[in-house]
Image 1 (cartoon, one colour):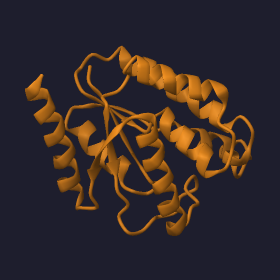
Image 2 (cartoon, rainbow, N blue to C red; image 1 turned 90 degrees about the horizontal axis):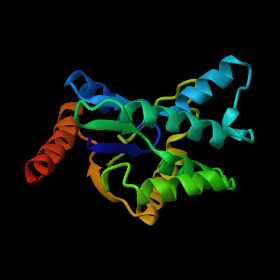
Image 3 (spheres, one colour; image 1 turned 45 degrees about the horizontal axis):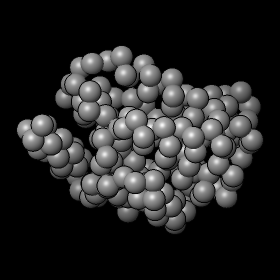
Length: 184
């Protein structure tokens, strides 16, 4: 089962790309951080990303979702983020990355859980705030740089998905996957 990561800055349009890929028949694994934030906010914690244990909660949910997806042998699966994104978030927030996060990333790379190329979705020139996304556009750009550097440092090649209209973005991803599939 080829597994690809879609990553990028908050608000870059990853979810819209994933929704179209899902409608087109691909398996999709949802982002964990947004769901952890939403749950904690519903429980009365307005900024859970500032709490100790946040990265642990995100990593745990990512792990559960990855293992569930591993059982789905439908073909290509797309992941909305990965543990590398959690490491990038720790770096962006100037938090010490939990040791088990670093160990998980080492295992992930050694065991090749994902394809070696990740789709890096570029920002669209704006950001729309949500309950879980309270970041300015300028901060999102800074976070985008941290994401990019972190993925490259860990050892991923990045396929840039430009800030084009949604159909063109989805087509770029699909064409890349189709081209690789025909080479296998």
